[in-house]
Length: 436
Image (cartoon, rainbow, N blue to C red; front, side, top):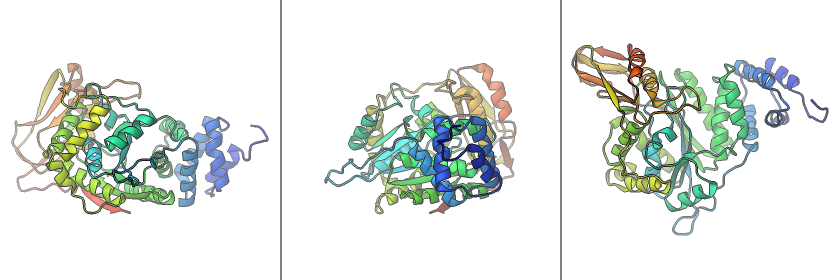
């Protein structure tokens, strides 16, 4: 440590250890000094733990987020124009992740139908939650990595882009996230919220809709903590001048009837063709309405745009613009094994975490960032909660290229299913609350 530094790490750690409040200047220095390597990893780990245990107030979290944004570049979409020469509005969506959550795929082209630009910078899966880019990479030829110029050109021409975020956006977050992952501090709400929102605000979107999942298959299992996270992120968006709302949605059961990569693309295309599972359609339409409202459009009918083919047209153009062939056959797993219903009755629970872990073990996900995924692997579900099932009927089909993976996948599903007497009803509702 040189004496030219404005503060020192031990001083900052001590303030949060003793439940104090960091000043804006202390926060700015902390993020900058950590990014420069002045604050050591063990010192930032200690500070993260102090934040986990003692929290931060709204002003601290807002300044922490701003400092993370300032560590890198910001995207600017102000040059995008409408056909009449006016400025094109931008709207984005972020999901905290879950099982079978393919909503981004039909949602981005659906919102673009109405003249709103959708810059959907997405990530890859880790553990039991699937990654949007992994799904799309099942499409032959499709590429995730675009330059800033390519993103701008595609938003101007097509109106929607789903691609990898550049390394220049909030680089402090990448370093912090890796540290949190190995020090037991991932669950700190101020750090989760600032991690998500620093990247989303740096993307430069005019409005943002957050899909905060709650339930066994979600990052947040507890509704009270999910609500706290949603409220914190909405406040951060507002503090940064970004129109932000959050929907709290159920992730106790998987979304749709597929959990994997190619099979989720297949299901997304069904939704774009006017079909698909009811829950996927419902959430896609509801999020589209929120995104359009954030962009100032209140008279649109996204459900109609799914049914009449307009959203499918934008999807095809979006995939083609990124080198993909939207009409090409998707990869199919080499091996399959069926899981049968154990009894007669109503399926009242299909545990999202169990299905997600099974899909992961079959090869659809990765344990480490450098792992490869199998495009065709996953779990195809034949019934959702509320359905009447009979003993011996197919309940799920497991898919993989590696038959040795079936046993561990079936172990994950041992307690996944609850079947109750006829007349029973599942207790879950898809959309739990709206926070604005």
